Image 1 (cartoon, rainbow, N blue to C red):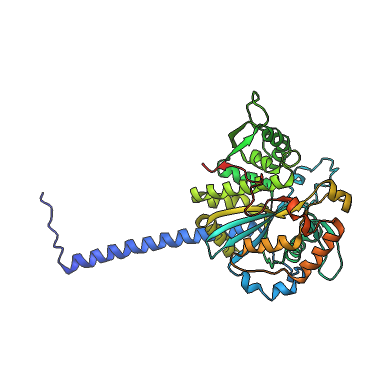
Image 2 (image 1 turned 120 degrees about the vertical axis):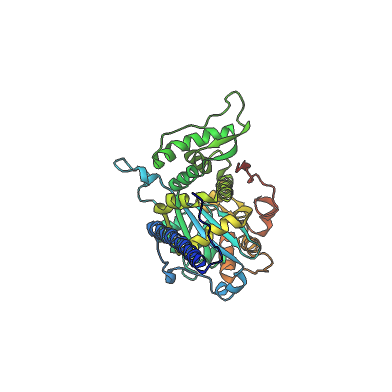
Length: 404
């Protein structure tokens, strides 16, 4: 039987073809709408699990002279990232001699600088033991370790401390515990980090607590026991192992080196996200229940986009010029880190965060600077004799790793 010939020029054929095309377009649009609706519902569900809370702006202090010059800082967006001690998550039914169950000390404080002008992300770690005034300017002096501000006054207390001691005007924060950091690293498939044998030993000690908090089986980092402590090689680390590496402090370079390890881990995570952006939904889903933030959903999405499209710049620890140890303990009676001097450190910090903007610290910084110098004995004449770990330095704060 011969096939019936179709006249493709006929009005009947053309009408039928248009109906098919329209039907196909309608189906395509419906599919897009369905996917969009599903994505919207999923995103709202995930974001709804985050502890999004507006800040009480009346409790977030900003030095008055800074308030008048905020426009000069508009090229760079600064977000305060606080890493909280998560060991309390594993304390139920157990003794709690260190008060971990209710602890909110921010043992990691990072100024995340999103430089929109240069499409670059930079980081500054504020050393946890930095001696800062927790009182509002004009209300006297209540100098203590920086990591206690969050525990004492929540995110508003932490932001106020950073703003008034560093002449900043930070309005947003993100707080996470290191349990979720380990979970996210596992989603990314782990990290490759070059470590010394000594670091493997120290990390294994921390790993017992981290594994318990994460709810995974303890897995030690294997290393070459035939080599000495300084022997280096690249190790593929799980989430718990990588976080344990980032927590090394005593014996491993103290807090200066510890903050460098933390920034390295974050850097490698961001590089892996860039290579596998398809994992962003899984990362958000994994982290959602353990994040507290002042950011809106749209701002979080924008941050995720920036993380993929912006380049990762340099990173340092604050104070840039500092002193700690026996001399400071003898002078102040507490084991803290002091900037030498606060005035010069704040000037250098602003040059780093806001390139091209000349800055003169406020009268509040001058006041705090004078107090620290009088109490510690470390003024401008001591700058050249203390540790320098800021821009242009070659201090041992740089650690190597790979995002492969």
